Image 1 (cartoon, helix red, strand yellow):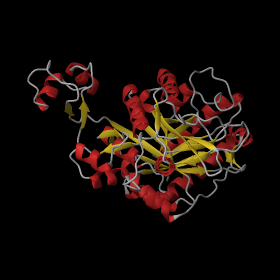
Image 2 (tube, rainbow, N blue to C red):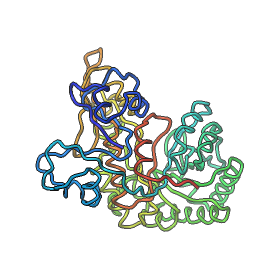
Image 3 (tube, one colour):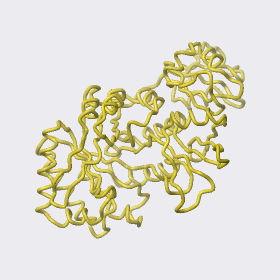
Image 4 (cartoon, helix red, strand yellow):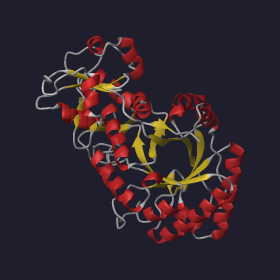
Length: 425
């Protein structure tokens, strides 16, 4: 699979011709909405077996072979190069596909009982190990609130993804410290919660439970650990897996209302796996920046792998970006959520180039609306996703977890299955 960044003056026809493909093949792979319109900086996934590399000034065949993890002799043989010292700048080299490590993948969805949710889930479920129905809320009495997830669950099952129940301490559309405290402070209530959860899991055919309790009191850290121990025992006795969601920490001493009750080492010991919520550095109410900058994501991964088994860690990946109105004012209008497909369509509609920030490994662009206001959009594209997949490989993680469907990002699913063999239960 090749990632091609559109250059000024290029057309879809010239790009396709350069790879020996038809324009229709590239249109289908990227689900291009308007094949006649592209902008410089737009990333395209080129559906090839393997990929091409054009020799750059100063590059040697040995450096290129090392970069792609291929023996030099094999690279020379495949490209029929007799003398490795005679490799001209601009020469197109074919890089064969490498070994695909296996991984698990998960995607969250917030279902509302709509048939379209099932369709969206069915399209991507062959690339998923789990599909998490979120949020299952709790009452103060320990009852599990119903969630209209029938279409989403059936869509997941149609492609082989295992439905996972996402249990939270959300109350009145916010994570509730008080609800968390009430549950964690009562063994009787915990037992009621887990009994009710197991009933729902059996009735709806869930295969795993994901517990996402957030905004807890720091003093409830060990109580939360003990609740997870109880949950793990009950789940395992019933033949289910237990997973947790963790705020993105870079040290065990990190302070803040989202972090202190999340004990990475204990979750690594108790749960079958944990999802690291490695996104929302750029968030709708904050200053404009990349949602999941690769340097910050790696800081979290580096800490997590120092205190948890790498094979129990799923790296969180956003399927979205944000459109901010400038100048940013704290407490001002919230940014609008955009899917990667929406972001590209917006750049094309406004006729602006897409730029790429090397430090965060994220694309962005500026535009002006009809009222004369400037906007900046940060989102994900094929390049930023490939950078995240490279991080998964480097640290040997269990897999990736997406927030959230049904936001459209066709390039992600192509690259996921090109980089990895996705396990299914």
